[in-house]
Length: 177
Image (cartoon, rainbow, N blue to C red; front, side, top):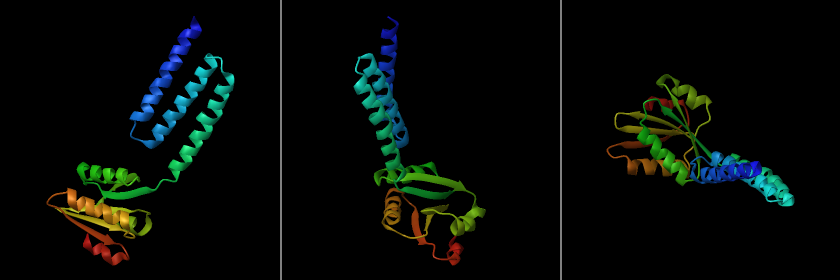
């Protein structure tokens, strides 16, 4: 009788983790939820008197697949952006939508104005964004197709704004800010 309740709880947990892995927006969370789903499935196979299948599910589904997915996720390209602290959430949401569409992992770090030179000269970044009135300045170490596509997307979607893209080749470009 007690085993029946435990089996139902494990089945319920497996269902919850399956739904969570589908519903989450973060890829890392989806992978971890999928691993938990697989773990609870392997426990269910033991309840169904299939120890060989349970061992295979635990070793392949829970561990090997999970490790392969996490390594693949680690190799996914990151898009690191430093944003001036008063950048609107609307602008960040547009950038995040662009990154999702381009299959990039979006990271942003807010900073205060006196940190521009330090960031431009010492930090690793894809973009530094500054907004002054209706002008949005995008600074990149090297302008590539992703950076240009983002600038085009922002200029198309943000009305009444002037999007300017600059390649930061040397410190003389700091005078723009």
